[in-house]
Length: 213
Image (cartoon, rainbow, N blue to C red):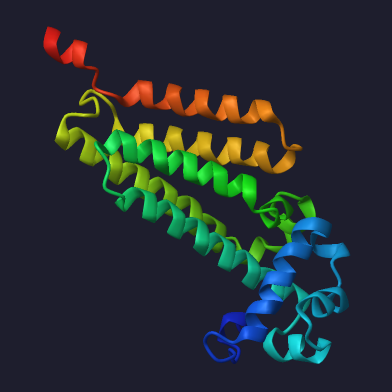
């Protein structure tokens, strides 16, 4: 018999202040201590709620961690989509904002670092779809932006857009991993800017080439 999905459990009222306080505390403590070392008692104390209340909302600490991950990935997707929809001089400018926002989000959300630990990867094996959805959203938004750039004449027409979207997505994910795993370094900002500049240089339909053609 299959185990019911934790997503089917009874949820608290939408906008519950205590529920949100639990999520906020859990995100911070999972980010600082990792899954194993962050205790439910510590989360309850930080959220200023009782331990039984946490188990009223969540079936286990693993369930709480999965919900925190889902919320963070959902926020990542929203950040990406917002930058893609922003009115800018060109789709290439949007692409710059998408890449930059995605990497900055990775830099600023400590809890994401816990996802790269072997214990977290193993624990989330049955829940990996949420991580895949986040990456899929990034790739979809990048693809749509490149296609829009082709239509406006800002992106090269000789590119395999699907492959280019794969490359840009892979670079964002891998460099995002680096930002999560390493201590803050001022050199990372310069490297991030160089990476974005290099990626964009590869897709821009340069004016000189158009005039020559």
